Length: 143
Image (cartoon, rainbow, N blue to C red; front, side, top):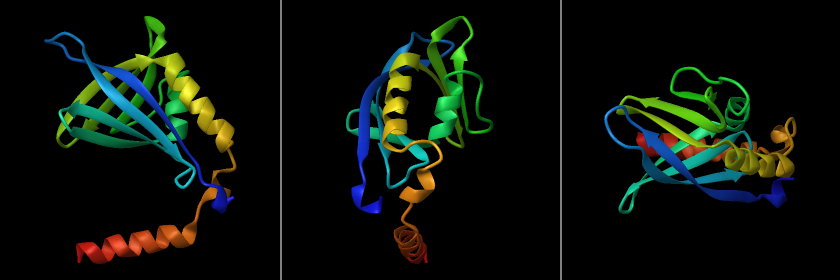
């Protein structure tokens, strides 16, 4: 399967929720690559040409569509008062943010990833030689 890599992308609007200001819409590009079959990447456009990229476990996002999922830096859950929306809570050393987004849109994106790489088949898509080479190259770059 390694010769048949694919990428799935979807644009979404996430709403940044703050306690002291109106909701702020944020453009988010969701992407999935069969080269990294366990992960989904979300690129948050933060204004101008700047962006912030987060990588999530694909299963974490899928689990968060139906129940509270995640601990620590990333938590995902349906909104209790509006099951058509998902809450995504992100925590890092530089801050904390809570977003909501459309559950159906996220589910549709995830469905496309599961059609491309079914659950349980992720391992067969991994290219361990390329991953090891990349890891060693990054390690040498830090030295």
